[in-house]
Length: 104
Image (cartoon, rainbow, N blue to C red; front, side, top):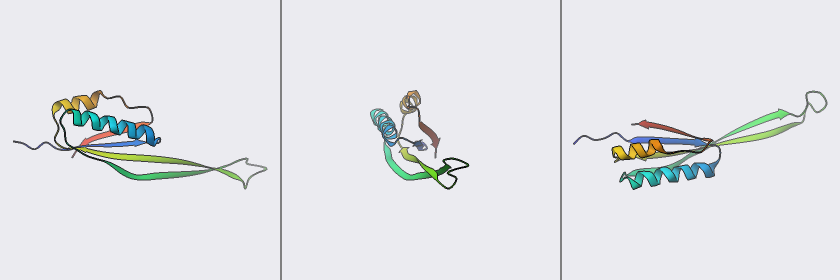
């Protein structure tokens, strides 16, 4: 009996609610096909700050600050079947959520 490699799914998005909905969909599909999962693991949030000057002439020293938070989740699928892989490939994820799948 050969041991299958694990499938690692990393999801990245700006809206944490959409990201959590996508994660729960993947978990439901994986558990519905009889796979064993580990996670979801909440990875640290990356926070990007941008400072933009309001005007180049009059208000040169005043600026506006904008923030972008990037949320990440990690799921490992351990004991899976070919049906698990087919179902995950067929899934639709919302705009703004990126999915990276690799075997480890």
